[in-house]
Amino acid sequence: MTCFVCLDIISGPAYICETCLDFVLHKSCAELPPEIRRDAFHPHPLRFTVGNLIVCDQCAILQACLISYSCMYCMFNLDFKCAMAISNYYKLPTHEALQKRRQIKTTIHHFSHNHQLTRSKFSCLTKEEKNGFQRLWGQEKFKCKACKQKLHDTQIYTCIPCRFVIHESCVNEMPRQVLQSPFHSQHILFPRPIPKGPSYTCSACKEEVKGIGFYCNQCDVTVHVSCAKYQTRAIKHDCHPHQLLHLGKSILSKISCNACHKDCDNSFFGCIKCDFYIHVECIPLPPRVEHRRHLHPLVLKNSFVEDDSGDYYCDMCETERNPEHRIYFCEECTYIAHIDCVHPKVKPAEEMFLDQRTKKNSDKAEIIDKMMELEEILVHNGKVSFNLYNT
Ligand SMILES: [Zn+2]
Ligand SMILES: [Zn+2]
Ligand SMILES: [Zn+2]
Ligand SMILES: [Zn+2]
Ligand SMILES: [Zn+2]
Ligand SMILES: [Zn+2]
Ligand SMILES: [Zn+2]
Ligand SMILES: [Zn+2]
Image (cartoon, rainbow, N blue to C red; front, side, top):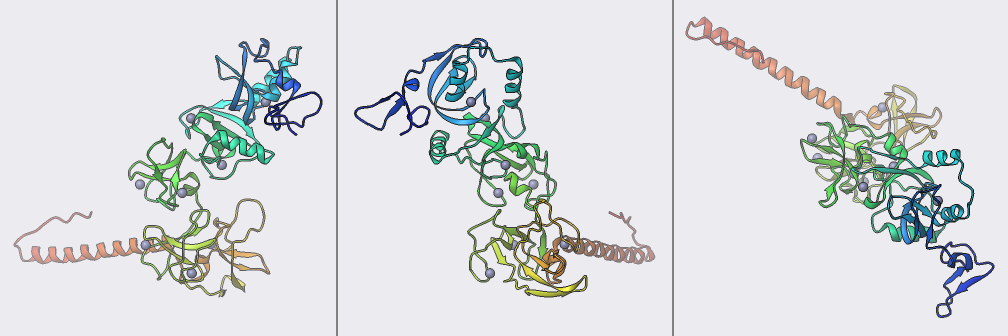
């Protein structure tokens, strides 16, 4: 049996509810003071509070407290265990101890949120703790607002009233702008807090953006932080008139291939505007190719992670690659290459744009030539002349 207040196993004298029989309290927990006064620790009295989400000012842990002690006048909270330690601590905490505490619980202002964020730790050990936490946190998902990943045993920043949480690392690594997001390459995207109320749909993954997003103020386009930073390549292939992006399940899931109608898994090509998605194999791409840049045949392979460095490169073009994406691979040499670096039918889309640009320029040159010819004829005939502006 565990104590309803401190959740520790009952031992020694305890109180039990005769009707419920499963409501038990340690004698010491049942006799908790309604108020703690430790002027040297905190200048105001701390009141007994039931059911509260706090970042404890002593241990800096974000937690759902059945019992906590909270200041009526300022935002000062202690979880049950820390409150008991202080309440039973008759000597004054040393100056160093207080300094140390201040270093742990700090607040910052960050452009990802409109309110002050509190730095804290989060770690739920048992299932009951997790459930208790989720009950108080509410239906808002307890996930990092930037990377959408779970938060566990890491340093986080939180704004409890807004149910806003974000990894400390995501705060530190958040760019001030995204220059050429694959999902909105024409303009710069800027981070901004997403106001509550109207819902914003991510232009990349079509899911709702909450908390913070990257925004184009010219087009009213919003994308998730993780989507804005998604590492991908734009390619061109005969199977679709527009450029295709190499995508993976961290961007889109539960979609099906336009060719074989089976689910698209980890690695596929897609045109989000047209809702066109196709497996790499359904394009179709050969499972095995020879390439002049590599001695051995290259094999089409599922995502491959050679180490845990977090940085992955294509050995052919020596630019970054997304470990989520399918690649051409030589096992003998651990040689890895982008699909569009190996297969001639899959062209990098940038090259396509380049082709179009040079084509446009040559078209223009042709027109200018024609006009000059025309001008010559006109001048020659002595009737009329006009100035040609080389725009
Ligand atoms: Zn604490
Ligand atoms: Zn994160
Ligand atoms: Zn807030
Ligand atoms: Zn998204
Ligand atoms: Zn735009
Ligand atoms: Zn398919
Ligand atoms: Zn399209
Ligand atoms: Zn490459």
